[in-house]
Image (cartoon, rainbow, N blue to C red; front, side):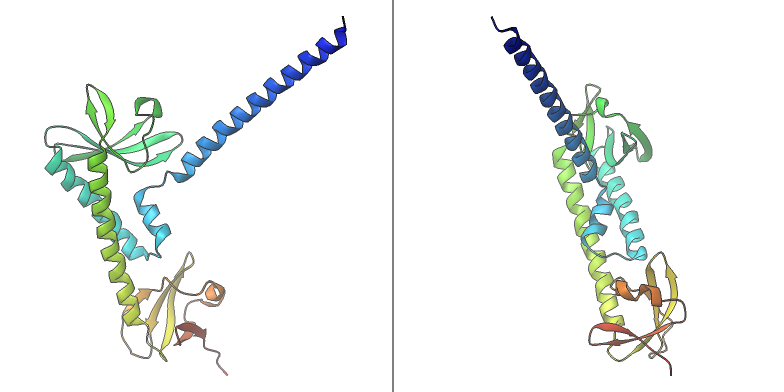
Amino acid sequence: MDLDFFNNLGKTLKQNKDVKSFIDNLADFLQQNNNTSNEKGILIQLQNERKTSIATRNSIRDEIQNILKEYANNNFKDEEMYFISSKKDGLYISFKYENGEKSIEKLAPKELPEDVKVNDILKKENENYVIDNKSTEEVIGQIEEMANELLNKQDKELENFRKDGHIYKVEEQREDRIYLIDVTSGDDLVLEEVDFPQYLLNDAVEETTFKYENGNYLKVVEN
């Protein structure tokens, strides 16, 4: 009997098990990492989809809170409503609404349904958390409709603000956000320009002037 054959066979089987174990662990890691990257709060998702000024972002954030509170008051009068707002350090951050009051709770994944996601609405049944798909769909729909209205208003205001041939002065630059004033019109209105060219950010220090021409900002070079 060839003992070397059986020894080699044993080594091969062990290596295959090690490879399988490695692949399984890698798949689990990638799945967890993918879930984490996809779990973004609704406000962040909206900002990633459309350019958003600080003022509009703050308005959307405030309106989200109003929508959640009103929905809880109208649809969860005698029970608790939980909105999963984000995930941090392995815990889900939940806004809890009960009797018109809001509180914040940190929930471990083991307490929640396996398929729970950020932006889900949950309720309790027999002391267990349950995803309320109908409420989730309705609330997210309201939030998206509200956000689109505010973003459309923002874009329309900027569209009216941009005038071909006008000179604009940088009133402030903060964290790559540019705030302009229309020098030509003489108005005191200062707006954040969400479509300011990235390649001009280094030139856009306070008091710098730009000319808006053919849909683009051009730095004014003084002689």
